[in-house]
Image (cartoon, rainbow, N blue to C red):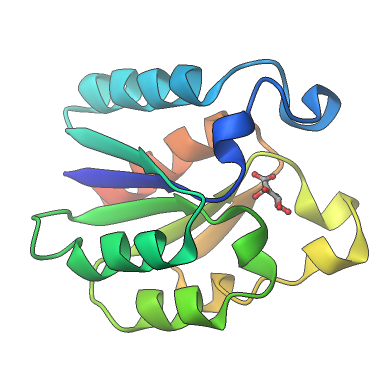
Length: 142
Ligand code: DQA
């Protein structure tokens, strides 16, 4: 059972910088993740919040709610949220960090991830497909 978390501004997909993030919406992404889950034989729950504390609580509660893996796109929190980093590090469920855009090809502040080091790994620049790869990894390695 996988948890797919999207952080700040990802509810703006489709509207926000389409040249960077594409024209598909968060709903398209979430339906796609559910369809991939069905194909891979895994149930998927998708959640998005613009609030750091909400994301922290979803991470904290993942294990007690029965999730076996978390795919997270922390949005800009990636680059500065020690609180999210500590939340990921505080628990046992494996986490994979995903970015739709290639953060290493963008502004210098996006080259730093304070969260990736406490994740199993990081996928960046492969669009929505990165979420699928993260899901496959979490299923295969469970
Ligand atoms: C992002 C990259 C971040 O730098 C940015 O702040 C986002 C989206 C991505 O998916 O490419 O909100 O995480």
